[in-house]
Image 1 (cartoon, rainbow, N blue to C red):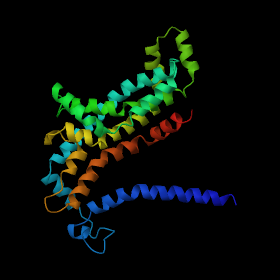
Image 2 (cartoon, rainbow, N blue to C red):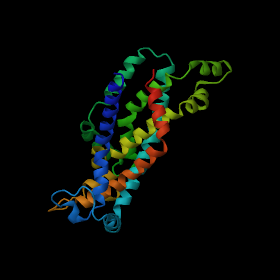
Image 3 (cartoon, one colour):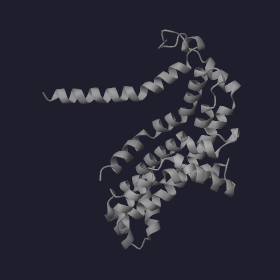
Image 4 (tube, helix red, strand yellow):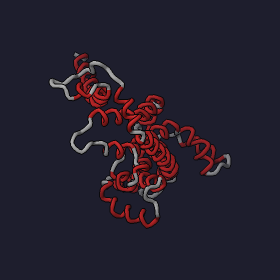
Length: 274
């Protein structure tokens, strides 16, 4: 009798994995099909024949795609670095400095992140226009940092609260200052949490669309999601172009996730253990 719930749980996990990865698998298979195979009826589930012509065509005919990917990478790295720097300090202060009503402050910080980005666009556009930050990496990095900072503070504060306070107290008794404790003790101990949070923020920044669409109007400054969304033709939707460009755009995310998968799992599980 005990095996039935376990089998049901395994079946639910397998179903969740299949549902999660099915769009990505279909996207990759579509990018490997010929144009006739994409529009074939009944649908052709497996590419026959398998071709790389779509990849060769988009790299030769649309060299700006690599520029879009580079822009997304620069903005993502800048946003992640700035967000972790500010969010790490803020999260540590909330977790360790015994601030009054820290729990209420955490709820307020999280509530701020609930505002839809679209509601911020008019004021952001006008302010960035006045400051000369439109079509600049700095402008979009600042916008993304403000958008994802509440999530970062929440994640890191939760992770810091799981660390043993005795180590920091011993260091404080040895004469170490608060900032030195944070840099030399807390950050090394919290490395899995920083990696997990940083990668999630990087993915958020990479996929963000409304702010990137409005704040990056020049073609040379567009990020990958915005640039790919503008590929559709005037009279037809080029599925082969869209699918191939999307696969190329998600490769960096897949590579980073594969490299840091252990740190991601460790950081998320430890951060939620409190």
